[in-house]
Amino acid sequence: MNSESKKIKVVITDLDGTLLNPDHKVSPYTKSVFQELYNQKYLIIVATGRHHLDAMGIIDSLGIPVYLVSSNGARIHSPEKKELFAFDIASDVVKSALSVDIDPEITTVLFKENVWLTNRMSEKLNAFQADLVYHPELVDYSKLEDYEAIKIFFTHDNHEKLVALKDVILSKNSDVLHHAFSLPNCLEFMDKSVDKSVAIAKVLELENATFVEAISFGDGFNDLKMLSSTGKALIMGNAPQNLKNELPHIEVIETNREDGVAKYLTENVLGKVSVTI
Image (cartoon, rainbow, N blue to C red; front, top):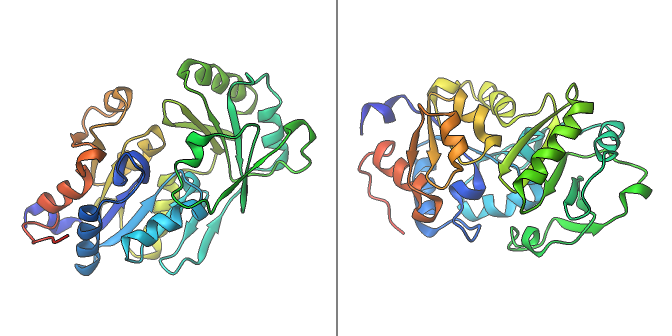
């Protein structure tokens, strides 16, 4: 066991592009490593942009109790799946964000508590769920009455279109909203007070732990503050180059396809503990 492992008590990880492989699943090897972490009494926090209903099935596949920070920090659930924190974007703020001129080719999604509202159905988005527990509902946003949402989400294959949309929305709402690109083709807006790092801080306080004692893994700009906050941070090899450029001091590890998170933890945190599949 090296010196790094002695001071680390908390393991924090993103899901898509990080803990999950390209098929959006936890590999058997990764599962075994996290079970060993739990057996050795590490505090484990999963922090994702996914909605909690969507993420909980993935968490269950780990086979261990963990804290879940979801919707980029708008929800926190305990290892017993009890909701500890919830914060939504006010209806009038969402309505203002959607009132700008939005290219009809851009898929627009509102994360609600039990369904996600969308202007167009997307097989690509549905593919992120192995079992469809968080259901889509097709809506006409011009006729919607209640716009309150956990998160606003836009997706399009043209990154520049999303950048332009981001600028227009923030020109009217920068005092109440902030954005993140979880992927180059995924633009997300949250309430100004919501961020993964803010929610993680709440969990750490509950557990009498600190960011200095934590190691974190991420691959997107919605992970930026989280990665910047922890005592040790790692960026996935598959992360966008501009994230790596933004955090040049942070080590880049193997990709999610190569079980980069689990391999790093085995070699640097768990030491030479034998991990079986």
